[in-house]
Length: 180
Length: 292
Figure 1: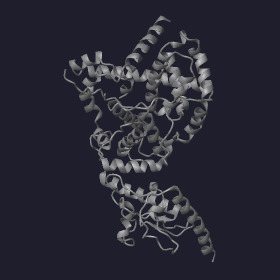
Figure 2: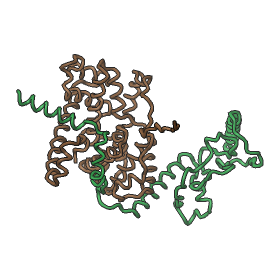
Figure 3: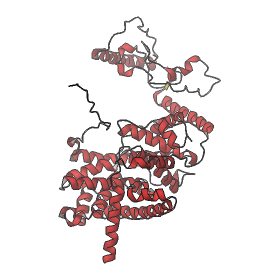
Figure 4: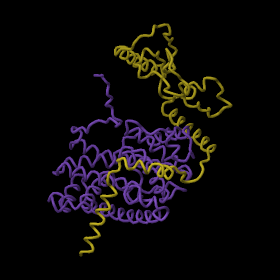
């Protein structure tokens, strides 16, 4: 068995060399050579236009899924028909965490699914929301008037608490509305 | 006599220390449960994909590993990216010429999850030889995280290795070398299709056993003897010791074939230029660079 032992030792030393310091400066000499080797296209050119179309399609279908789930039209930023009742709140009624903002460049707005039907400018609203002083969090279904005149102030815990309470009473009211 | 200001800042990346409070049994049990929820389907080449074949996964994985190596990413980035890639391909049929876009996007997201300074979209696009654009990568990112249902904190074998080492009565410097070898095996496994069916805990345990065997540590420490270690680790991950041995043997044979390929590759590149030859003899190549 000496040959086997030699083979094992050989393998071990190979492994040691292979695993050996890989973060040391020596590698710097390799960089230009390796950069050329690592930088490569593996499976031929990408069909950019088809890819864009497919992305649009995928995003649209995922939006549709979300709309079904939440009965909210995220494209038009409007509640849709369904079980959930949506209620509009002013930004100062909710914690800052929920304020809409776009970090960096805004994403390209999605084209609405059926351009013939949905033509309002509003259609792009959802995708291009930017940080505003008083952004609307959601549109309401019930005909309550918004308290737009309220002064902007820092939100506190009790604000959120009262807002939640309001939601509760409103769902009860909504349930009554549904009943008739 | 002159007062001078000395700048002692170093350019190393600041990172958190390992939290010993997270290396306990309760966490390990949760991890063993959690790894099932983030595991890919074993048979996606047969059942889901039409264009993608196993050898293509090897090609894209090798490229991803090279990018991670060159960018000196944290060790976990590559296995995590491969987990994303396999899980995406388990759900969604993909065109062959978009596989590299997917691979780049998986690294992009995995790097954000694990690194202080993540890889940028622009850098990754350059590595594809500009065959994809940064805006495409960002859109793919959205699609990817959607498909993964935002379950991005998947377990990697690295997470388990730390738990095993904590439990092992072995000197710290020995642990360090076992860790290093085992991590190399983990990366090697992530490039190979045969290991998709193994959960991260199994790959971690198999890699630790293979590392200890390769280093001949079993002779010096009775706990590290083959029987004792496989018994111990199979109990930790709650599997059959034979399964663990099979996994470890599979890792060793993968290493053998990778080394053989590496030697062939080295010979072929040695013949190219004399300069290369000199470099090869003195510069350690990484075992992860070998399977081209």
